[in-house]
Length: 65
Image (cartoon, rainbow, N blue to C red; front, side, top):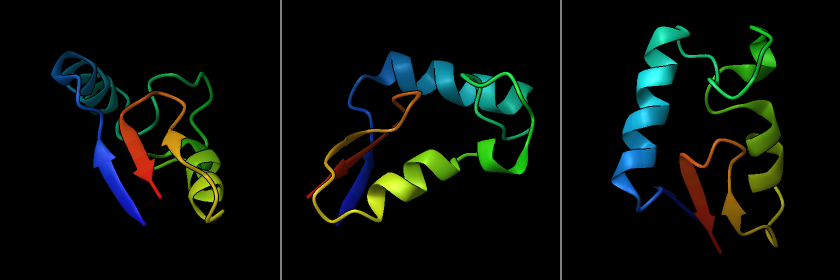
């Protein structure tokens, strides 16, 4: 399993700026709850599946098989 940043630098910069503004919480989520702290629970659950390949919700990370 390999997790990398999105290859689009503009997306990475925008999401990282949003994370900074929201104290590490996903900028794509409204609620500031523990499950939305980056790397969010949704993506952690997805990457636990060995068959999953794709981006996290906000497209900051990509999991390769």
